[in-house]
Length: 322
Ligand SMILES: [Ca+2]
Image 1 (spheres, rainbow, N blue to C red):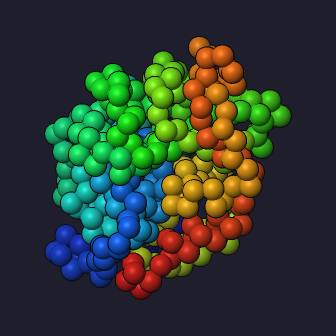
Image 2 (cartoon, rainbow, N blue to C red):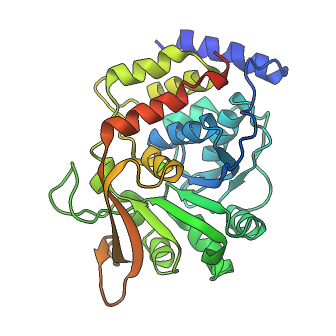
């Protein structure tokens, strides 16, 4: 089942390598939102689809991608290849602290990709330098465990003043579609001490927690709409999706894309946003603590259908060359 898609993709790869890509980077748009994406791409499937979301939206000016958690060099290859397929080789990818040697089926999609390499600068240094350079005018979207963001804060504890916003896919406050009680969310509990640094740093922080994201899963007909669009980027997403599928019945939960949507249009895709004093406890729970917590905007009550139409509309925009 994978062969025809991959063969088609290889054809596009060749065209892209020769500079014959059938689409170009979106034209500059006044008032673009400068963003950095910090991602553990290559584990769950939503990261790759979130990066494609940013690439497909010309209103975003993607300043760079930083890679966190586990086998970060292998993850970075996926980001580099996606950027290459989108004709965006100039966007830097910075590798973060390696915290493991694990492998993942999605890594195979990019393991032999060498046309674009990550930059030599470490992710945390890139975050500090880029935030300072665009002080007050950049939003950090962090959708993985928070090693890089915490490392950047260790280098510059006042880094928060440079960010317009920091939007995380992170945490669980009240409940979720998975549990009637809050659970220790992956991006927090995977690197709890780093999450504690980030939540305590006084950042202009917004989180999209499991309370919202677990309510938003991809229907088969929605996947088909993306697959049928047949751009290099959407074919790449389909290839990665197939590698990720644990079973034919698996469905993507769009955790990370909802953080991107919240960045694109603050508040538009949630019925309620609460400002809550939050701390991260030693077990990786995000707790309301009115004595010690820092204020965090928490996005709740997702507008599933409005979000999905917006998201799929971005992935299938005509500027991608079809
Ligand atoms: Ca992620």
